[in-house]
Length: 169
Image (cartoon, rainbow, N blue to C red; front, top):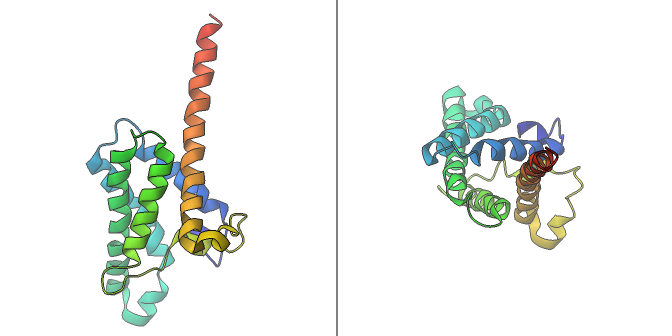
């Protein structure tokens, strides 16, 4: 996810990040606690390399503490993603839960810390026009929805392939 942000700015990396995170979170063996852990690992892998500039201002311990605090929001997302993965239209639910955690981390504590909102990394991406309709929150939702939907599509293609293969026997 981090490389979707400047200076690298590979917008598609955010979509790929959601595909891979969704793969882990919707796996039937992933528990709610596992979702929390996977979300935490995702958050640490995202925020530690995204926020090193803070260490120059306040030192390495506050930088790592802030990255860990931000990663906890991703952990909560992972936990709730496991809860909603069985609902109809689950890719939409996952994208909504992601958007909710972005709003929450941008609001609390003490006015929040919006650094790392997925939409901020989409300066060169094709989904940028979503900002005109709903601002950065809609752009973040759109990126999350594309990633979760791509994984759902992949699941359906595999099921179709398996079903069509069993009909040929």
